[in-house]
Length: 139
Image (cartoon, rainbow, N blue to C red; front, side, top):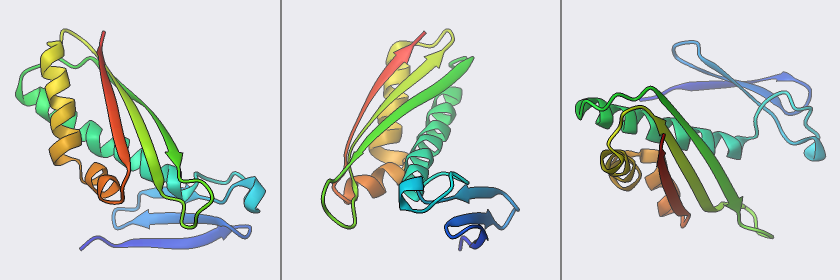
């Protein structure tokens, strides 16, 4: 069982979430909604979670294939449903950029395997009707 504590710590909407190990994340509403830019928005955290989840999978898969990953970054863009509440993620696009002497086919395979099979965040979004797309670049 995973346990998270969330406490309001700043203004009306500034929250801090803590896990059992003491890791903290600051969360806030947008300034238009009364927030003060104290932290990230809750739906942005979902995209961050997607990046972290898939990134861990991809590195793990490439390490098993003895692919030397010297650098790895992701650019994630998402569009939410308009005019409805709740406004879920509708479309998300990820560009995975890997650096090193990596076989491009193995990089593509690792990213596909993560996004299609292993990443729990990706599957959660997919089950909610989100269209996930990704592109892999090896430099």
